[in-house]
Image 1 (tube, rainbow, N blue to C red):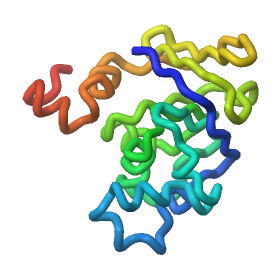
Image 2 (image 1 turned 90 degrees about the horizontal axis):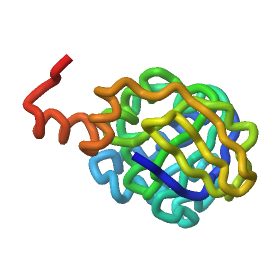
Image 3 (image 1 turned 45 degrees about the vertical axis):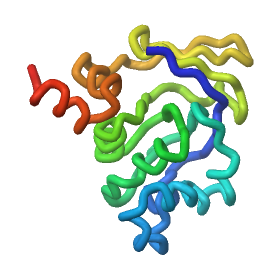
Image 4 (image 1 turned 45 degrees about the horizontal axis):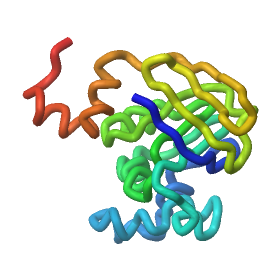
Amino acid sequence: MILEGNAKKFGDNISTDLIAPGRLFHLRNNLPELAKHVLEDAEPNFAEKIQKGDIIVGGRNFGLGSSREHAPAIIKIAGIGAILTQSVARIFFRNAINVGLPIFECDTSQIDAEDRVQIDLLKGTVENLTKKITLTFQSLPEIMVAILNDGGLMPYIQKHGGFKL
């Protein structure tokens, strides 16, 4: 599985409240509408700037805060193809995989805003095509790659009838 897109760069400590603002709690039952506000408290009008397949590049502690399982869902709905970050909150990581949003930890310091990035899930590599640099990340367990390939946990379970561990 190869993903490619332009980097949308954020810093450290991007919380679930920055991703899905609490003041818009009333929209959590209308995720497409909530997705129009994704990350707007971190970068105004961010959703309007997204091109399908863009890749969020974060610093440390991405997704900290409350569980807000709709936070990774609206990132995906907005058109983001994946997230690369130096470190990620564990609950956000699982929620991202569960909704079918690829997320990986790697050294993101060599990726700048709008760099063209290509991610190879199976090889565990990130090619910064703009700078001609190759980065690595720990590849995901086979079950998580299968969940991502099927579009998330629910489609995986519907397709396979459960887990084969």
